[in-house]
Length: 346
Ligand code: PMP
Image 1 (tube, rainbow, N blue to C red):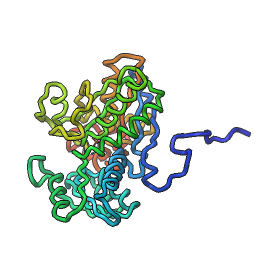
Image 2: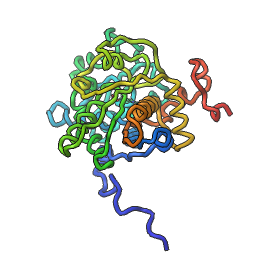
Image 3: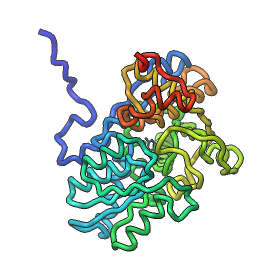
Image 4: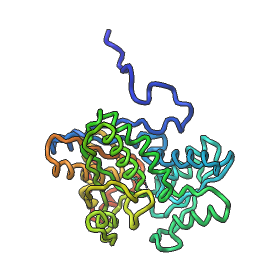
């Protein structure tokens, strides 16, 4: 008889979850073998696609809802409104379903068909709006704020509501710290609201200070078409280029990003991110979306800069199935002059 295949203790397995929201977080930290071998470092991805709503944004959604409950502004049967690229809307709607709230989700119509279909499937009151820059009053964030004001609803306001990054400070960061016994030399992360980057970076800094060890090196991973790389490098938010990645890139310093301890930035072009996404899929069995490719690309570049022997952590934000019609669609990719994985053409 061989021993049971189930180890005595695994994070998240210790006790039954009280409800769906209790199942958010506690995600595995997966060693990325190819990236690690190529750099002589240990590169790990936090498997956030394993959250109940399929993305890192479940953590922010839960933190924002629990903060609104604590402050007494979200009452039983209440309604939440949010502007989102999709994943926050999915997290908010699922947590709201579990807790008896209603969700109105405002989303740019350019986001993937899969996220739109999923939001409809889970019962979100979905309002698609044309994609407009932040300075335009028709931008999805402003539309969501006005809807909340007019209806007397709770506006989740993920970009500037600090409950978002607080959720990561209190969960994502300590999980990573414990999973690696405090050996974290660097953390790379892209930014949409900045909640994941800032909250995790602040939490890791706090853990390092408490342990009396050097704080990890924090690197912003930025796609083309975002102003943040320039902001970190030379305090210039101007934007060039564009990206097919969704949910990341920013043209302003959000409330959540403000004051984050960022040491450096990497700007990653889409072809570099796509090659990594394809390799994670075919060489490592990990199906991830565009922002995860940007994050891992920045982790590899950071590993090369720091040299062998370092431990670098990044975030696998969501799964590839959310982008089948884009990242894994030869016609879409060719239309954008982007590389197509050979097996997609069969
Ligand atoms: N990746 C994906 C796929 C996302 O949807 C988001 C959030 N819009 C992010 C990364 C960025 O996370 P954050 O908002 O915490 O910066």
